[in-house]
Image (cartoon, rainbow, N blue to C red; front, side, top):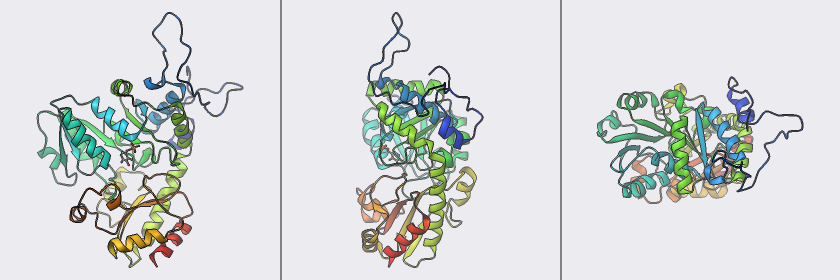
Length: 387
Ligand SMILES: *Cc1c(COP(=O)(O)O)cnc(C)c1O
């Protein structure tokens, strides 16, 4: 990978297709070849250039890492075997026993368990903060606080967190601001441009976009990413070359997929606001959404994730999901197929009905991951299921 194509000045759709790929010589394949090997012939007499999949430096990992760094406008990036692996290694590279982490209360369930069960048992103190409480972060800061972790947009409520005031706080206090941007993708939101220090994605979702490969990525400065890579190597969180190859292929279409998903979600959200069967529509693109102004300012698109609250509660939700013919009832999100899920049976099963309601997830709450199908067909499917 001696020379890469000059793509620095290109815009995101072009970077998604070309960034990170080697210069194309005559006879070179247009598609990055899959090099599904765990071993690579090594130069005699030097420790340099040793390649091994667990080190995150196979040819397929190299290409996709450069592409992702270009898309987030980060200095460097490392791909891992899952979003959870990415979060774990990203935070382990920042925190030591005795350190304190401020984390948003509104985060992916797996991440919440990682922080409150695993990290606390490693001697790292974690405080969960309501990200919408005024001055909530500042009030809970301690002298041992090292980092702030949050997710935006928030799963599954689709709330959007304003990064600007938070980045003033982290910069003035010398804390690392770490953002899980899985719900947005770099087409819609690039946290590094808004004062974040580290960006994490579960590439399983929008970045790969085809519901067929797991992965994660951590992006930031080259020296920090190198520390994450060392954690990945020792905790065994690296991806296989084939996973990197599939992710690279998925990324080529990122811009067109995300634009269609943004458009489809907006059309569905607007249509649903007119329906009496739907008590509430949660989509940051709607003017009535509590974070609409923040989203309009810090994001380039409102995203493909939305949520509906059906007027008939849990029973209506059950009936609705059973009647859908196109939109499938399945967990995960961000891919080309539209999917629906109910947090009370997935991410939030551990809470009581009352606790869920107090978090904005009453029974009848449905999360919709909008795909790239024709919006009219999706709306027809929803209309049929609401009847
Ligand atoms: C899915 C998800 C994760 C975890 O990613 P995996 O690839 O499943 O390990 C983390 N954060 C968010 C916001 C997610 O949606």
